[in-house]
Amino acid sequence: MKLSNKIVLVTGGTSGIGLEAAKLFREEGATVIIVGQNPDRLQSVAGQLGDSVTVLRGDVSKPAAVESIIKQISEKFGRIDVLFANAGMGLASPLEAVTEDQIDRQFDVNFKGVFFAIQKAAPLLAKGGSIIVTTSFLNEVGVPGLSILSATKAAVRSLVRSLGAEFAPRGIRVNAVSPGLTSTPFHGKLGLSEKQLNEAASAIGNRVPLHRFGEAGEIAKAALFLASDDSSFMTGSELVVDGGLTQI
Image 1 (cartoon, rainbow, N blue to C red):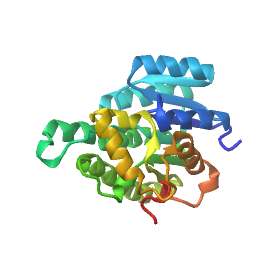
Image 2: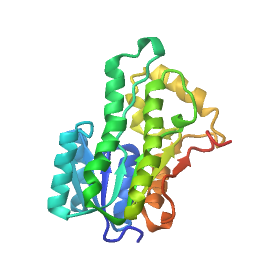
Image 3: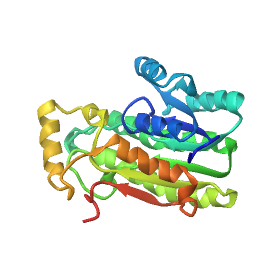
Image 4: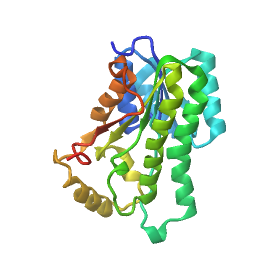
């Protein structure tokens, strides 16, 4: 198994890509810790995955909450071998309607949440460890109404390069997985009506060379590759899994 005896932390692990990755990591021998905010979803995940997974409630946009989570992990497990900083959110809004609160909320979760998860986990990461960050096809493609979400993902992509350089002397790799349009609950949280969501999905989906949305499990497999020794000579990279949307 690719992750035997590894301690793996997944933020945003109660649904979509994070949940599928947590399941796959567990199947590959890891001891998995899932962080999420919604108590009902955390309870559901605990019921699905059983005692082999530890679920912790916390808001990754709050550095103090992240610090508390890492302290709990330190006390129980003593180390982290893989960090999958996957938690994210987005709000769709045209330029003229974007508010300061919308900007703050998205950067708090998508950038600060990733940064502080890595910063606070750093002391527990040993040589050979792997950090994976979820970016997005929005790094490369302009989509009306998603300017702030896109900016947060571009910022995180830059962070992966910088932190890859910073962690390299310690033998810790930092990489990103970049999903394209993926069938997850994330898209339903953009603040769009069902009609608007369907129209946007159709418009972008028609541009995907493979003519379909990706599945969360497909993105999880890419995250597993980055988590495991299969990618031992990769750092600062972004693994694109988008059906060719940004590549062809």
